[in-house]
Image 1 (tube, rainbow, N blue to C red):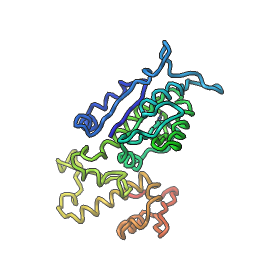
Image 2: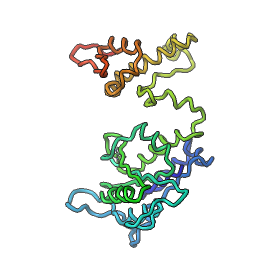
Image 3: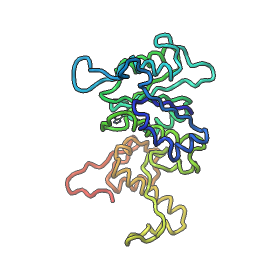
Image 4: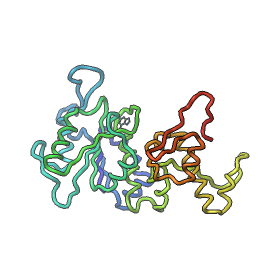
Length: 286
Ligand code: 6GU
């Protein structure tokens, strides 16, 4: 997979040399290139931003600078008469981090891990002129190839897209074949196919500061361990992320799951799950 990152702070992406992503790059599973947006400026001051039309606080990133940079990195001849990617070159996916984007989640990461070329355009200030995303969306629709996704990490505001680019790259890179040493570790984790949060994990010593590892995990009884872990996943999800259970397909639940959820006051019907209405004095699941 090839990933290009465009930013006015290339040094912000230094962590891509480390750990799992750094290893994937060094063995050739991942080709990441970080570009300084200012190298596409043409003025003495290397200007990338200007004041917003319509007024308001802050600065907006100029579409002309972004257009020159993205045409080059996306392999488009020139804005306006773009061609599809040349033979043998994967069509690129342009990703724009913004707090007003669609939520980035594990499904997004899985879909991107199947693609060949990602281009991440990191904005700063109040963001990138809105015509940039519009333009490349239209180029993609008319000529095939480029697709455009504006994505958000969650409901909070960061100063720029660089941290979001790091998050996206790590989430995607670990799904590429050969990047994570033991692929089993991708199976049971939080936000995997079950949609439930992961159960708690324990290691030696069996007693630490008076706290014991749950007996069942020392029992060697595989079926009981599996059931305990499933219960813990359900309990955590019900407590921390009840909306995940309310979106779940009830057909994915076994009889023990249903009994457990019912014992916590959940309404378990054929059409879906409904969390208990919380009124004062209600016990919480636990
Ligand atoms: Cl993707 N970008 C910025 N600037 N802020 C964010 C975000 C992205 N996701 C949440 N907040």
